[in-house]
Image (cartoon, rainbow, N blue to C red; front, side, top):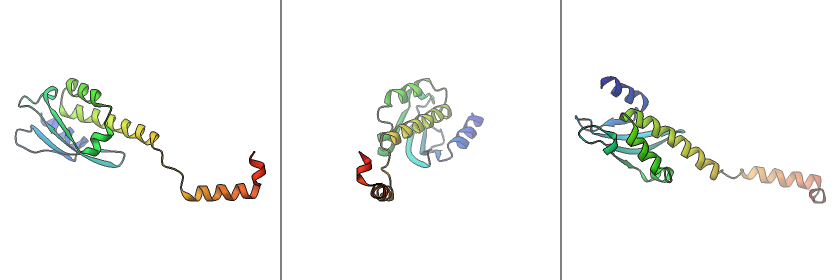
Length: 127
C-alpha cells in the first residue's frame, strides 16, 4: 500500500488524506493549468465501488454529462490512484471539448484590421 500512496502523492500532490485510516481524501485535481476542488470518501474496506466523490461546482459543471463514465470508472478502478488518473484524463477531455464549444472570439484588433483591409480593397471587392 505504501507504494500506491507514494504514487498517488506523486500523481496528485494536491490530494491528501484527511484521516489516519485514509478513508477521506481532500484537495485538488489539476488539468490544463487549472485546479478543481474535490473530496473522495472511501468506505472502511477502501473499495472505490462504494466511494463518494464530492466536487466543487466548477468541477461538477465541467463533468456534467460524464456522470455515468465517472461512476463506471469508480466501479472498475482497482485503487484510488488508478481512479484519479482516469478522472484526470476524463477532465482533460471534458475541458478540451468545452473549449471547442466555447471558443473565445477574436480580439478587437482582428476586427479593426479586417475593416481596414476591406477599406483598402474596397467594399465592392467583397461581393
